[in-house]
Amino acid sequence: MTAATPGFVKLLSITFVLAIAVYMLVPLIVVIASSLSTSQFLVFPPPGFSLRWYTEVFNSDAYLSAGWTSLKLALFTVAASVALGTPAAIALSRFRFPGRSFLSAIFLSPLLLPSLIFAIGLLIVFSRYGDGPSLTGLVIGHTVITLPYVIRTVSANLIDMDPHLDEAARIMGARWWQRYLLVILPQCRTGMAAGAFFAFNISFDDAVIALFMRAPNVETLPMRIYSTLEFSPDPSVAAVSTIMILLTIFMVLLLDRIFGLSKIA
Amino acid sequence: MTQLVVQSVVKRFGKQTVLNAFDLEVAKGEFVALLGPSGCGKSTLLRIIAGLETPSSGDIVINGRVVTGLPPEMRNIALMFQSYALLPHLSVLENVRFPLRMRSQASRAEQERRAHDALALVQLDQFTERYPRQLSGGQQQRVALARSIVAEPDLLLLDEPLSNLDARLREDMQIELKRLHETLGLTTIFVTHDQDEALALADTVILMNGGRVEQRGAPEELYGQPRTEFAADFLGGANILELEVVRRGDVLMGLFPEGSEVELQKSDGLEPGARKFMLRKEAISLAPDTEMATLAASIETQNYLGSQTRSLVRAGGLALVAVTDPVSAKSKARDLRIGWRPKDLIPLTS
Image (cartoon, rainbow over all chains, first blue to last red; front, side, top):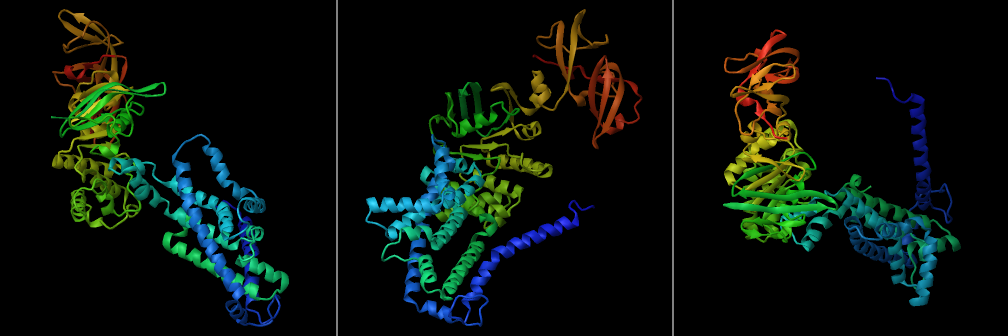
């Protein structure tokens, strides 16, 4: 057999892919390395190895309470966006109604519009009609930007679903609510899990909306990192970032364990 | 006893009429094939019987009860989909138990026992804990079949039951379906575009064309005595001969384009004039005996098919296809006489 692609082209494309991987991973490596530093300051390469900044983080009330706030925020966001996004995806995929494609576009718009614009809008709405920024406000804001992910991932599940499942269930005597609960919803499981994963990460990671919706008593982890960087940058920031990276990796592994990544991505 | 009546059912989709005043009666325990090309309305009819489509007019009566307005979940029927439509998140046993569970028939233990029995009937009782994706296509179909019979439906509907299987499995499954029907005696209606399937399985074949019945009858009747060119051609393919019928004394003769004549068997409505006839490929003999109508012919080409040989012969100005056993086809002179029994040359109405 003759090679369809000349050797040097193959070599070139492999080099290119490797370069992209390096480009993506270097910042992570820099952050992780800096977190293990002995230095007082955020410098790279670190002068020596120590875990003191991790001890620092776990003894800091500011980090711990910010972490707790972020965790609560992310979990509420996940719950809200999965609870709203799954039925929305089911309705969009199953029913033909006027304005359907318009609604699809609306639901995807947070993916396309800069979150800054949303943040400004949210701030105006909450200042005018609510009692200003709050955790609830943040949950609502994050739900808006994470919903499209859930709708996307669940829709992908529904596209793959055998279109005859619902009819088969009817023939077998299932009433409409039994079909939603026992037939359609179970087909959305991987999409719901993937959507939840995205929602968690986006919420846990978000600094833009959190910055605009900053309430006096609500500080999320990204905001804590941001203000530390601004006023007293030290390697604790890198330590927190490393913990966030590990959390993400852990969740990816968990998802893979339960559903298999190939089904989700 | 009549199990199903389809009463002058009409189905229109927009301007298009898919079923045109369709009538059908199926006796209890009958095995019926709805056969026809795609677009003939057979799948629509099946979906109307199942309740997945509503007829534009007409009625469906199952077991003496008018069910026309009744949704499928309220009819006691089973439908096996072409895609099987197994629930991917449930085990084989749970899939088969599903109809009993939805209809709350008996206790859970009793439901499981009946699901087991149904699986045993299709020889799949060792796979109860597996998931559909872990099974082969043929096994998945057996699960779908077990699920269809578990609740003892009034009607078993099968949509193209064998079309997703390879040739070998298809043969096994034909035997399996026939055996199952003989064991359980369920009134069964299946849709197919495959004439072999219809002939192999059904007690009654209903040949459909353009939203109406072209011809209905036992498989032997449909194959042996097709009334129209469509029926002759759709079931098995055949030689269609256009002959001039002429009267010679008190016998009718068929006049070939090149002038040769063969005697025709008397039949109702056969009159002098142009007429189409059907001659099955296997009705033509390359070594005719004295009881046959014969014709001078020449063999143009032959295909060896293993158990048979197909010969393209030219006779009387027509090209005919003859399928014979390989021995009699072998070493035939290129010029010969071919023949057939007069009863095999069947007049068609157009």
